[in-house]
Amino acid sequence: MQVLVRLDEETALLLERRARSLGVSRAEVIRRALRRYLRPGRRTREMRGIVRSRLSLEELEEAYWVRG
Image 1 (cartoon, rainbow, N blue to C red):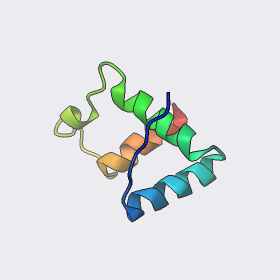
Image 2: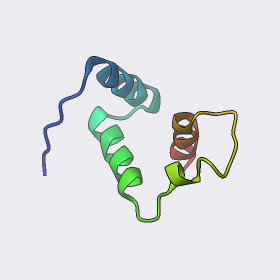
Image 3: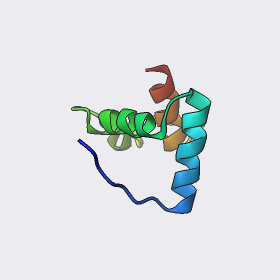
Image 4: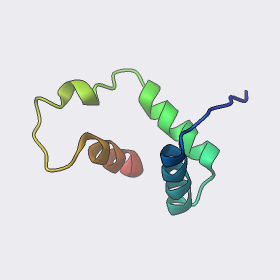
């Protein structure tokens, strides 16, 4: 299935950079991100108040995404 997504310039640039850094296509980065976002039981945002970290929520999600 194909899906058309419109991105603002900043998000498009971030997507391009991430795809390059991982050595995959932009479509693959989007697929991976959606799989993780839609995964049952994902409650990262709800846990933010429980766990204190020196990393931002985005940095934490990225760290676990790249390693996962």
